[in-house]
Length: 428
Image (tube, rainbow, N blue to C red):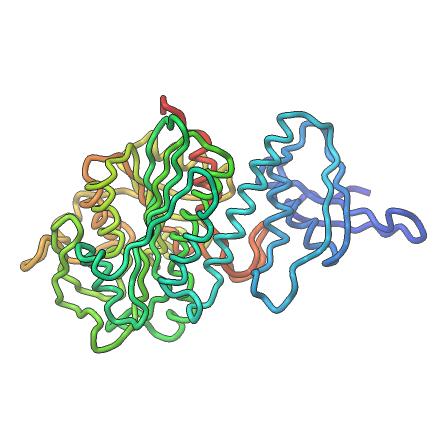
């Protein structure tokens, strides 16, 4: 009898009156990391909630991928009515220091992914900007090398985009700075994550179907926070400053309007032409803050920014924008290894004329290809710092179980960032 070949496909062989009572054959597809990750997820889903299993592995098996798949596939939202699983999976393989190190990386990656999924799955009735900021502060507490600070109220005076977007909500905005500072870091990387805890569209209101999942509009913020915590757990020799602008885009008499002119942290101005394009306005402030206060070697931003991303690339692929070919290659390789696809799209200067405003430095929603125009808008705020922008709205959510993904928030981006940051050294 031949076993399953498709990655993640499980064949169950019952063994009545014997131990073990059944044997699972798991397909690994082509045998790459993605196949082994899918196999791990398939195995854990085939088990009962309190069942125990052993996975027998050859010496050359990609242990990290398999372990990640087991953890990813076993995820349940922490506040779900179904209790957490209490089963156990033992990996049986020849022991070596290399395998132990890979399992440590897998665990850190899984912990980060679970955290990003939990934060994103949390309902907006709980997850306002203050709540999210409090979570980051609590997570950073008592962890050597990690610090978290939160700006609120008058401290946000220069953050015009953040104040405009959050001005219509009874839950005021916050700005979080989370820092990992190892001894003798090779480089300083700034991570920026869009943190809109719920997006009604504001005065440019969304239809009901477009609004019902908008608790996920802070998926970028969840990913960068989770990746930073993993970097600290793994003691990565890279200084990381993570910036999270947090706001709820609501509708009220104090909501910002189409036609308003917003002054950003860097002093430049934007004419708001659509209050449902709020993410770029809060990111602009964070990027201006990074350029002015932090002067990093590299800036990466993750944002559930446009629906145009899904139109162009589908549900499993993020859009990557950067003028740097080497950075594009390194991020794409990290994403491929982590199981988070991305595709580089052009920053076409042909469209720059569309950004012009008669009353400000730019308009917020210029005509043209939506995801590209949003990236061109953000490019103004990076200055001369090497940077990349990831538009990851579509892959931040799964409609059903899909290989190592579980239904709901995917935690997209945390895995890629951990792989990328782990590979950084002073020479890259």
